Structures are given as C-alpha cells and as structure tokens.
Length: 177
Image 1 (cartoon, rainbow, N blue to C red):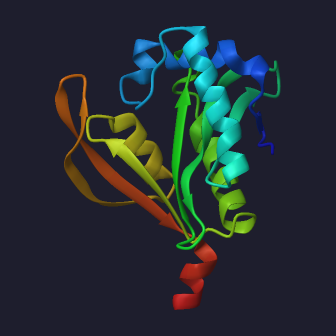
Image 2: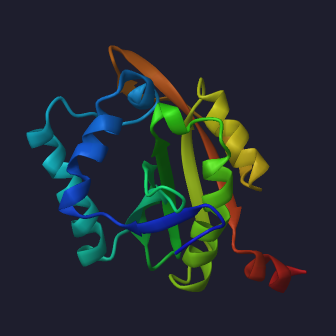
C-alpha cells in the first residue's frame, strides 16, 4: 500500500536492525509495551509479524519513505477477532520521524484496508494516559475516546492506565442512520 509519501510493506528479515533500532530506543518504548535489548531478541518480533498473518490474527507493515526508502516505523493490527470483526491498532516511529505527520498520513489508508479488505467493523487503540501525542493523533483521525482503563497494566514498577479510543467502519455507521 502507498500514500503520497510512504510505502507500507510487509516486514522481512532485512528489517531486523530497523526494528531493533526502534524497539530498543528509550524514547520509542516509553509508551510502548515491547522492548528488546539485542538483535537476537528482536528476531522474536520479526517472527511475531509473520505469525500474525499466518494465524490470521493481525497484520503489520513497515513504514518506508517513498522518496529515499528510509525506514520510519511500523503500523498494524493485532488481536484481530473475526467473529466480532474488530482489531487493535498499534504503531511506533523512530524519533527522527516524529512530528512529520506520518501516522496521520498512513492511518487512514491502514484503516480503509481493515474495513474494506479485512471486513472489520471496529478498530480500537489502547493509549497510555500520559501519551498525549498519540491521543492527539487518534482524535485527529476520528477515533473517539471511550474511557480509561484505570491501573490496567503494570510497567516499570508502577501501574499504568490506558485510554481506549475506537473508530467504527463508516459504512456500518451509515447503515444505522
């Protein structure tokens, strides 16, 4: 898939160093649930990307600049539930890719794919309450705040609350009117 500036492509073994660079960076993982301390550990993430598709429980893409083929980050779905037609979206970017409108550009394309190709009715995101940048991206992209899961996770020695955002397939919303 492509947008004006970005190619969204499947992950390959060649992405190992890019994924490690992102998921070992303290700035990136501050609000992210996974981190890796070595390239060897990061292989688990590459396997996970592939396994999601094999199990049909999700799909993730590498975000790459069309202009210079630079790796920027990742976006995708996991916890895909076919019965209930929903999935959880997640994303992360390398710090040098922050504040460039990347997620706001690729998110509509990824959501359209989920609604049209995967047949999803609902896409949800769980965002740490302190991650205001991510919350703002969700709001700008028509995800509605549905509430806060208080002390939902235990991370780095403390409880973390998560704000729940969701968007419903626009075609399904039209059918309700």
